[in-house]
Structures are given as structure tokens and as C-alpha cells.
Image 1 (tube, rainbow, N blue to C red):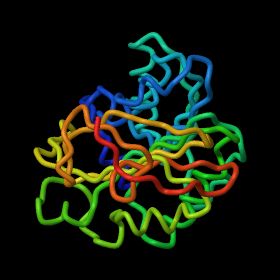
Image 2: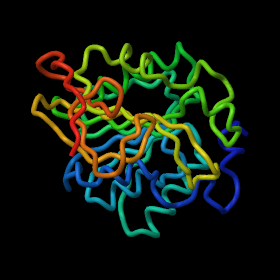
Image 3: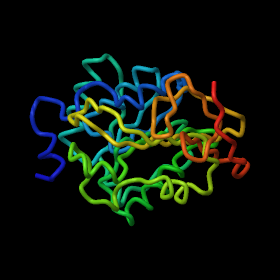
Length: 242
């Protein structure tokens, strides 16, 4: 039995049945009928939630045990979900097929595989598509509440800016938060990418910059970031208070 099959054994859902909180907050960005790719989707909580929003979802994971549980969760929720068991290190990624690509805590990948995964994530997006990425920062190791113990697997702003330098960065947020997925404290980084050259504003949570709920940002250097695939990089704008 593989490591991941063993980890997902049992009737209970390892990370629960509710969607990731960051993903759920993106509901206003989604449109029924869009196509979505949920990468390393495990037991399907995120893919199933996307299907509940009216999206056509491909949920991929390496574990057949996890995917069987994803199928059961989709059936219980009354939605359909396309499942594919894949090895992301050798998978022939679809090209420009998805309106939305989601990677939530896919930090099992070291630097070499991560470079490959990031290329796959970007390549799978249609022009105009949106990439949602969330992961732990190196500070998480000191908390000891979950996530990889290998520092090079974790995300920093510089790492993400470099990896997606060919995209226009639209939103990036670094913050500490309670994570109701087994850990009691998390140190996370959100990354949102879209092929959209228009100005975008979004309400954000309290974070390391001292921003509070209700503050707004417009493409900032050190807070939430979005990326655009078309038209090259847009100028970085300054922080704007509500």
C-alpha cells in the first residue's frame, strides 16, 4: 500500500468534509459552468465544493483510497465529479483547458518537483483562467501544528514572485490563522492568479501588515497578489486604505 493510500485509510475524512477556508472565500470569483482542475485533491472536499458551486471539476490525486472517498462524498452531496488517479511527477498536464486551477497545500513537492508542478498549473489554465494557490510559509515549522517539516518545500513571497514572474501578480497574502483542518495554528500564504489586466480590489483579513477586515488593496508589493497571463506584467500599485 502506498504512503498516501495508507494515510487516507478509514471512514473518517482526514482533513474533514468542508472545503478549505481560503478556497471557500473565493466563491464570488466563480461562475457556474466553468471548468476546474483540483490538484492533489485528496478525499475531494475541495473538488466536491467546487462542483456544488456549479463548476465542471476534474479532481486528481495519487491515492485510489482518497479518490474512492471523494466519489462517496460527491454522491452524498448530489454532485458529479470527474476523478483521475495520477502521479503528478509524470502526468501529462492538460494544456489551456481550465477556467480555474486550484492547488491547496500541495507542498509534498521539493524544489525540483515544485518547478514542474508550477509549470503544469500555469499551462493548464485557459487564457483568462484563475489560479488559486495556498501553502505554508517557513515560519510554520516552529509552530509544529502540521504541514511539511522540510523548509525547502514551503513558500515565500520571493519564491512565488520568481516562479510566476511571467504572470501579472494580482493577489498575495501572508498571515497567521487558525486552520480547522487538524492544526490549531497556521502560517499560510495565499496566491491568486488571473488573466485579467483590469484593476481589481478585494476585502482582506488581518495580516502581518496590520491591515484589518475592510481594508482594500490594489495590487500591492507585500500583500495579496494576483497574476495575469496576457499582456505582460502590470505596474505594481501602492496600498490603498478603504
